[in-house]
Length: 200
Image (cartoon, rainbow, N blue to C red; front, side, top):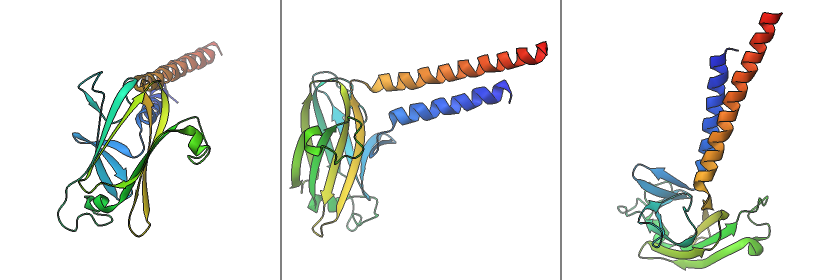
C-alpha cells in the first residue's frame, strides 16, 4: 500500500468520525432550514438562546442557559399530510409529547426512564401547528430528545435526536484530532517500513 492510499484511508476515517460527531438522528439541515423527521412527517425546527446569542441552531446547543425550541408543522395543501407525503398537516390533529433524557450510555431509552428524564411535556394537540418549549440547561452534557406524535388510531411516530449542550465543537475537534493522529501514524508506519526495506 502506498503512502497515498494510507493517507486517503485515514482521511476517509476522519470524515466518518466528524460526520458521526455531527449526526443528530431525527434533526438535520436541509437547504437553509432545519427539519425534524418524525415518522413519515416533518416539522421545522428552530432553536435559540435569547440571553447568549441571536444566532439560531438546529443541532448541539452552544451554551448552557435558557434555551428555546420551536417546532412548526409544515403548511401543506389538502391531502399532502397523508402518510408518506412531503408535508405534515396531519400532525395538527395528533397528540404530541416531548421528553429530554440525560444520555448516560443507557442501552435503551426505556432503561431508568424516569430517573434519566430531565424534562417531560405531556401529550397535547397543537391545532395551530406550533410547539414552543423552553428549558434552562444548567450544566453541560449529552442528552437525548424524544418527540412522539400519536394519532387517533393509536399509531405512534417518534423522532429521536441525541444532542450536546456546550460540547458541540469539542466533539468535532476530537474527531479531527483523532484523524490527525491516524494520518501521522500511517506516515510514520510507512517510513519505518520503507527504511526497513532499504536496510535489508
